[in-house]
Amino acid sequence: MSSTRQDPLVRMAHVVGDFGNPFYAEERQRDVWNEASAFGLQLVIWCTLGVGTTTIWIVGAAAVPYVTVALVLLGAVCALTVAYAQHLGVDLTGRDRVLRWRLVPYAALVVALMVGLVRAQEERLTASTLAGMVTGAAVVLLAAYVVSRRRGERPGAP
Image (cartoon, rainbow, N blue to C red; front, side):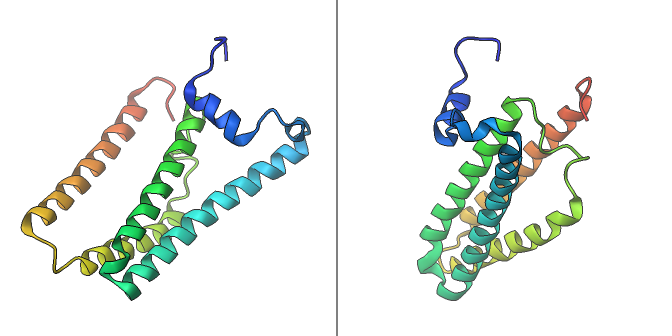
């Protein structure tokens, strides 16, 4: 960092991660902790999606608010994790870094979760709600496409 005042995201990460701790001074400890943290984040993602999917299919509509809160929290943590890495110049979404076959189980679990959420809400599901869901999904897919295209057009982008 060349500036004397760090970005709020970086300051927050340093407070939460306690990066000033002497533990981080030793390289091997740092490497092991990085791998353990990556494992932990992936485990939290899998567990949240798995428990949410199971709960929504077993409990039904009563579980929707709780599963929704868990998904919002998971999404926020994942988004902040990626934003922190990208802020420090590390692209986690480059084609050379993402094994596409690994996304298939995630996608299957997310589809099962989404179908379960729709099924749990079918008595409350109106045409306008369904239209909003389709519109929201289309906007997210379009935004992801635009971001991936822009990344490819930048000089030096992977």
